Every structure is written in C-alpha cells, then in structure tokens.
Length: 325
Image 1: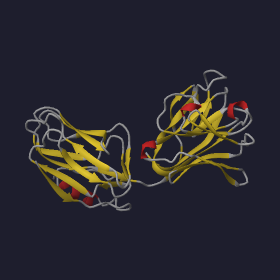
Image 2: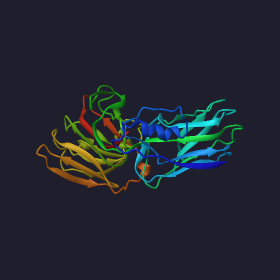
Image 3: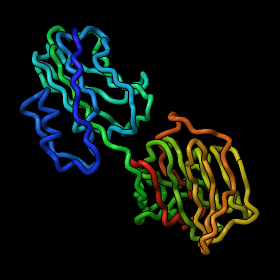
Image 4: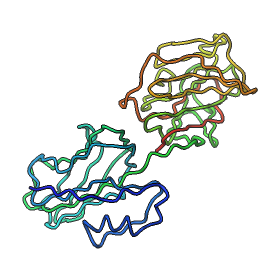
C-alpha cells in the first residue's frame, strides 16, 4: 500500500461561493463529485490517496491539526472512493487522538464510502486525526481517494434551543417546570448545540430567586439533578436564600444573597479558566468565583444543562456563545 499526499486548497471564510475551487479539489479524487458549499465549510489542507490495498489495521491517513475546526455530525460533505470494489462490508475507523469518533464504510461490491458520525467533533492545534483500515483487511478493496470536509470554528452568540426535556416545557430560550415533584430536582433539559472548545459562555435569568433552579455547562446529560451539571449556578441554593456555585455535587461558593430577577447569571470559559459572573440591571458585572479546575479538551463539548425543583420555576433568556455545533 502506498499513500500519495495531494495538496488541496484551504477555503477561507468568504470564499464559499466559489464552487469551482471546492469541486476542483474534490475532482482530484472523483470527476463525478460535486457538492453544494456550506457555511464555514473547509477541506483539510491535505487529502490522501491510498494506492493499492490497505493492510489490516493500517493507518491510511494521518493529519496533525494546525488550526481550529470541527466535523459536524454525519460528516455529510466528506468523500471517499475506491477504484476496486470491496468484497465485503469494510468499515474504516476515523479517530481523534486515537479514539474513534466516526466511521467510513464501503458496502459489499461498493466503491463509494458512506460516513457516519453521531456527534460533532472538534480539533485544536496539535490534535491528531487518523483513519485506520479494517482488521481483517478486505480481499479486493484498493486505490482509495479520501477528502474530509470540516468546518471553521466561527464563534456565535445564540439563543438556546432545548431538547431532551423531562417534566419541563421549553418556550423559545426559556424553560419552565411543568411536571414531577415540587420538592425534587426532577425536571430539566439540555441545549441542542454545544460549546465545542475554547472560550464561551452561558447566560440566563430566573423569574423568582425564591425558586431553586440551576443552569450551567456540562459534558453530557445523565439525569435532571443539579449535581449532574459540571459547572452550575444554583439560585436560592438549597433554600438558603443564596445563589451558589456547584461543580457536580460539590458546593464551591455562596453569594451573600440570592440575587435579583433582573440579574444575569453567567458562566464564562476564559482560556482554561471557568468563571462565575453576575451582571445587575445597571450593567455592573462582578466576578464571584473562578474554578480551581483548569479545562482541557477532554471537558468538551459542553452543553447548557438545567435543573428545576419548584413547581412552575423558570429559567429565562438563556444564551450560549462560542464555537457551537
């Protein structure tokens, strides 16, 4: 097996209307390929052409990230084509730093691969992307051209859309408890989009500081309890009349008061630091606590996660900023 490296054009933001440039790069692999450019779409600056049949568990593509990008769920714009059909179903593993996040599959007697990726996956400079051939190797599959299409990391500030609501009802970027117990943290939802890496923030208000509600950033969503949130503001912390900072089940900080309904609670990622801010209606911002936990790439992606205890309690005006997907 030989791997031929082909230099491709890296599409900068603002060049997305130039369909010819994008297709010219893809046509180095398949003259019949043509795709519609997407917002922030880029091709990795190197594409691989595997000459011959890949060996069992062979690394057929290796790329070290030199900038910030992510692959959207599905990887629908990526392409791979072989000149010799596969005898059986051949599944290639696509990995980030040695951990699989997607697959590239050639069906029986197929020459064009399909890509599958359950969630978006982000890369920062220094991360390694590899594609590993199946083990055992396919008897006939050979001469594979591969182009992976990712997206630029463009920060945005968006009103949160919620999903996976339990005992809660979402209206726009607000969430209200609508079922369950009035004395248990058994209601909540998470954001559809997540902060993929780097700087970002979640901001929210609550309609009553007498209610116990929590909102913050979390990797994953196990249950509706506030102790499931990695980094959270908890209003009226445990009925003590104080807004509190919780990281998981650990109380980290307590304000002297619960705050006001006009206050904006914020959890901000600043470099590797997690900061907890409150902004008053007068625009006065106060940093109350900085986490002792320094974030790494393993902490991402971070969803907006919520937890509601009291019947009718609400979290409103929830905004998420950063590189989202």
